[in-house]
Structure formats: C-alpha cells, structure tokens
Length: 247
Image 1 (spheres, rainbow, N blue to C red):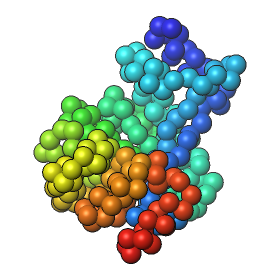
Image 2 (cartoon, rainbow, N blue to C red; image 1 turned 90 degrees about the vertical axis):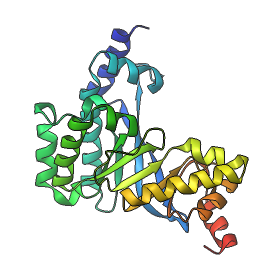
Image 3 (cartoon, one colour; image 1 turned 180 degrees about the vertical axis):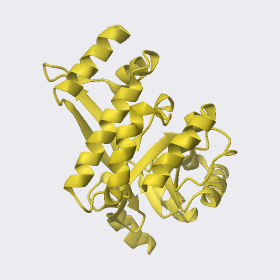
C-alpha cells in the first residue's frame, strides 16, 4: 500500500476512534509498583479490525508531512486520560516534524496551561537525533511545554552526541547499550559511563531494553533508579530480583 493509502486508513481510524494508547511502565528498580510514568505507543486498526503496522504508517505520515496532526491527536488522547485519573502519569513520543511551537499546537498549549495538575503528569519524549536535527525548533517547543508544567525526556540517548541538550527532566538510555552489556564488562563499563553522562543532564535517568534478569544486575552496577523493558512488565519480576539483590 502506498503512503496515501496508509495515511487514509490512519486518519479514518482517528475519526472513528480506532486509535488506542498502549502503555509500558517505567519502573523503579526496587519494585514494579513504583512507576515513574507509563510510556504510550499508539495502535490503530482499520475498519475491519486489523491492526495497522506503526513501522509502516508512521514513516508514511512523516513523508506526507501529516505526522504532526497524528501526534497532536495522540497527545490529546493522553490529556483526556490524565484528566480521568488523578494518579496517572503518561509519556508520549513526539516526531521531529511535530516539535514546532506554532498554530497547530496552540490549542494543546492552552489546554495544558489551563490545567497544570494535568500538565505536570505528562512527559513529552523527544528522540535524541530529532533533538539535534531540529535544535532551535525543538528547544522552543520544549520550552513551551515546560512552561505549561510538562516534563521533557530525551529518548534513545547515546546514539548521538549529547552536546546541546538544555535541561531535560528525564534521559532514557538507548536499549542497544543494555543489550551490549550482556557481552562483557567492557560494555557494562560503557553503559555506566553513559549513565553518568546522562545524570549530569537530567534529574532522572532511565535504562531501556531491560528484557532479562541479567540486565537488572547491570542496571544495579550503574546505580540507576529507573528501568523499562519486557522484563519489567513480568509479574513480580522486579520485586523478586530486587529482593535477591537486596536493592
């Protein structure tokens, strides 16, 4: 299917409320009940109930310069969910094309400014390469969000140089580094150095890709509080490992 066809299916899903937010927790290493926030990923289905592949439709929306409308729609969904639960905290990924503080986003900014109790529970995640490729636009966009009370996270940290980041609240280490740490102390040391660099930039550091018990051992060596990954979602997995490590 071409880009136009994919975009049509996605926008049809938006109109018919067939776009849902799947949540993945960012948990404290001492136990899965302590959650920093839930990162949301958008899932869309066509009129027949078949799931649309984000790996296909997201790039298609970007190529057609329609991703900003989709991102705004997803952020509005997150805001609605936050309004419905006073204890919920959600994170949303933003495309580089979306990180422009213009008329497209004014309504969202106003919503957040009028509801600071909602804004303070919303995390907006910037992919690290996007932060640098569109530095000025992204910085101004992030400034507007922070002024409204939102927290800013840098995703996939470590893929690109860290120069230029201005006071993000959260830095998320790219999953490739914890995967590499399974192959020797040299890679564990590299992960630890990256965590230290991230900690100089932000109050909270998250290690992504924690998919195996071994990964949590390496996280413990790096003295990081927050983790995200398949292992984190397993029932009582973090509690069991934390107990055995005496975290």
